[in-house]
Image (cartoon, rainbow, N blue to C red):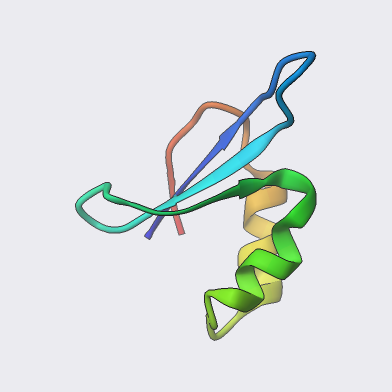
Length: 64
């Protein structure tokens, strides 16, 4: 699974893209909704994933 954190603009909020191993988009959500969206995905270790998402830089595709 890959994560891409994107910096928004004045009118567009920051957002997160979750992608699978083939880089197909799985989920796309606002940065401010991390917890709710990860709960919807029913992942095993939400807190560790949330921590990784908050630590990565904007614009860099990162494997988690």
